[in-house]
Structures are given as C-alpha cells and as structure tokens.
Amino acid sequence: MRRKLVWVAALVLLGGMTYAGDYHTGSQLVCSQCHTMHASQQHSFGGNTVGYPQTWTPSPYLTKGPINEMCLSCHNDASFAPDVYGTDTGLTLTNRSAGALNDSTAPDGYQTYMGHTLGSLDDAPGDGNDDYTPGAEGLECTNCHQPHGYAGYNQLDGNGAVVANSYRNVAGLVGFSISYAATANNLALDVFETGPAEYETADVNLNEPNQTGSGFANWCGSCHGNFHGAVGGPEIGGSGAPPEHFIRHPSASTDIGAVGGGHSSLADFSGNLYRLRVMSATGDWGTQGVAWAAAPTDLTQTCVSCHKAHGNQTTFGLIYADGANEIFENGSAGGTYITMCGQCHVQAP
Image (cartoon, rainbow, N blue to C red; front, side, top):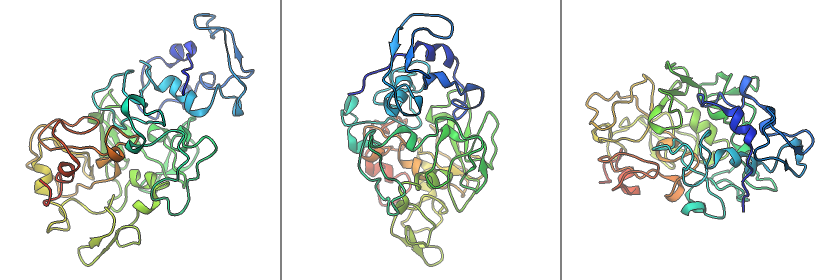
C-alpha cells in the first residue's frame, strides 16, 4: 500500500540524533528533505548520484509525496530516525516511548484496533465536540505533529505557558502542546528527557507542573475531548470531598491513593517492581526493578501512563504491565489488562 521513497539526501543531512522536538525546527529544518521546488531531483546537494535520478508527482505545498508516505520514508525502517510504524527495524529501541502506528494493511500484525491508524476516516473516539475531522486522506501524521517545529506558534502547555519548542513537535488542535527539558530537569515543564536515548520509555519522564492539569491530557483531549476534563466536570464527574463517583478515568488532578478506599492505592502502586509512568510534581520517579518504599504522595496518572501514544500490539495501545517483570512496548511478559489496572487498583490482582 505504501511505497517507500528512498532519499539519500535525507541520510546525509539528518546526521546524528538530537533531543526530541529539536528536529524539523531551527537550523535542522532542512526544507529539501520534504519539499522539492520542481518535482524533480537528479543529484543531492553534494553531487552524489546514488539512488538518483528520482522524480515525484507534483503535490500540494511542494511536498515530495502524500503526507504519511513522505513521513514514513524516514520514520519507517531507517537507522537515522525513530521508526514509528509497525515493528521497529530502524533504531531498534528496547521500548519505544510512543509505540507504533498502524494502517489498514495491519503491518507486522499491528491491527487497526491497537492504536492510531494512518489513513483512517473514522472520527476520534470521544470527540464529542467534533474538533477533529479527518480529511480526504484520513488520519495523517500532521494531525498530531507540526513538521516545522513550534517556535512562534504560541501553543500552550498543561500549565498555560507558551511552548517555544514543543516536545516531539506535537500540535494540539485547540492550542495545547507539551513542553520539555533535556539533560537538566525543569519542574515547570511537562517532560524531562534524562539521556541521549530520548525515544526510549526509560528516558522519558513526566513532570507535573500543574497539579490540576496535564500537558499530555490537554493535547490528547484536543481530539478525544470526552475522555478528558476537570474532576467534577461533565466529562470526568466526581462529587463529595474527596471527589468520588467518577464516570470516566481521570487523567490529571487526582493523585494515586488520594481518594482512598477501593479507588486506588499508592501502596499497591509503589510495591510493584516495574511501574507504569506517572507524573511527579517533585521529579521523583523511583527506580524500576525495586519496590518504591518512599514514593511521594503526589504521583498522578495521565493518558500515556496506560496507553502508547501511537499504539502497540494490544487493544487500544494499552500497556499490559504485571508489576513483577520489565515493561516493554506491549507490557510485561505475564501482563494482561487486569494486571495493568492492578498497578493502582486493589480490586485487580
């Protein structure tokens, strides 16, 4: 279904990896990787003819091809950019932070119910306000990502602050984006990348700059609006003190164990050897592989705690963690959706 465009120029120009969000922006916004002035190219900038001549059918905005096909020419099976489609045969990461997209061809067994489906003409689940309307090509990468970076676009993070350079170049339909820090943490930003393997789950940690909101939830909610909202509001519900009777799972503002009773248990969560990612207002995420005896009481779940943003090989891109074994893209070796819920909830095993 999707022919792969081979762009030798991209191989030359991409060079080394940078922190997420820093590519396709600033000095690394390399126009010729995605655009061609005359829909024809015989040589690379350096005169290398390997892989050329190559021509393209003229496309809107002078792009080298349809959006998804063009993005996948670098982001599928390449060794110089994260592989976001089907099985990771590119950088071959241990656990891709966002997981994998799929399409109607079910690449490598990635079915359409397992995450975001490129080309899908369906409405977004929970899109009660119709913020997202698929175009003629269906779901495209640029529905969620801004290919030119975000400097000057005045997107807001979960704390209401302007994002100068958005994490993963994400683009919210109603003005929300995600801020991030690399190398040194900044608790006022949504994400902290702790090392050079910035596409690995282990190196992507979630701050909580706004304890009544979530950058990830606001961004996801720009398409899936009914699944997100303030506790006590019409989307999430909740009444009493502390709030109870949720009608949808909160994705912000309700800390693990804060409500008490059978809702969730911080002791259960912190007792797992391998835990799902949660937001921390203090920048403390414990150490995977050992129980977390001194877990802070401000830990909060959000969308990507339980779902891969792109998807994986489980229903809805859920992460089937069992608490006892290392977590990979689909979850743990012995994990199910029940054990995933049991990371926090006392009713599940």
